[in-house]
Image (cartoon, rainbow, N blue to C red; front, side, top):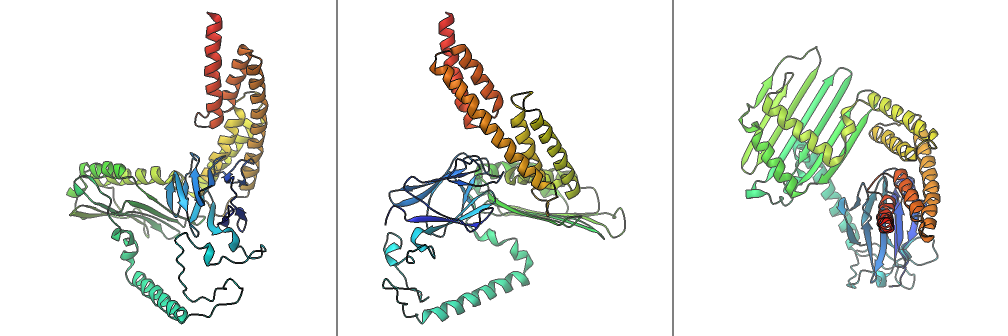
Length: 444
């Protein structure tokens, strides 16, 4: 293969439809304008990930991003990629393709010579062109494959429709995660709050394979539908097993019922837990939860919110909109006072990010959402500009060996970027340590 073998196609997100060829120097992706693929998405880190070629293969490397890089739904540090793989970063989904497979780029479609390195090409009879440009003869397998595929889809669809309980247990067939003493864990939790004008449903499922999935449907006011899932580390599952065993859940009755506080109202929690061979289900309807149930229910909800980052869902859409509006006001105020305190621009950006966080699950977005995005971009551009100017002053003082001035300028840099996880803060801190060491030697 040539060096420019691979391409990245954006299937979904702000730049949907855009195609990038991966050159020998690679591509960086992030929120910063300096990235090769710069995307205005507050869920992205400034430098989120990098695509690079290694001995003719394509790799993606996560650059310590805040919201991770996913390859085929799995969080990675780095991963070799193959054509067809899907990479999710923020609101963007990229697909790996061969560079010469792009239609209309003046090159022919990928031929068998551009197949994977093992050189095996299987003709499934879809009429692909050969090297001479002539269409190959369609194989008799094509109608057979389509027919088998259609039958399989119908069978799976019918099974799921006729057996709703099966839908939430499809991941159970996966290989169970190895837990202490083979205490395989399965959790199924559902909360329903309903009235004549409102329906809120929260479903949590934790499969034996360690896949945590949460579904939330909030039909009050603005419809909200949240679907998130994540693979949980075995160590966390072991901790959860111990907490469940200590909660007293397995000693509870199967059902606790009371009376609704008002007609046509339902508040119901149903929780099923299996640890190894032990299985117990408990349902609480229109009454206060017994202590063991409440303890475990709160533990599970907190666990899912921490793992999936969905804390905001506990508030109504109206409350979240109100919180976002308040955060926007703070962001504007800090931006207007950017000359009063070096850290105010950073605080403005944080408040803009907070406003976006509140509105993550609110759809449609309120009319001031555009103002939030534009304000964030303006504040970040201003901080970038001031940072570069301040960094120049600090480096000039270092080059002139004016250590007192260098220390002062570096301290200002750290105040401008107070986030210790930010590479700019780390760079300023390392330089300041060196400069202060030199100052101590001079004072001696």
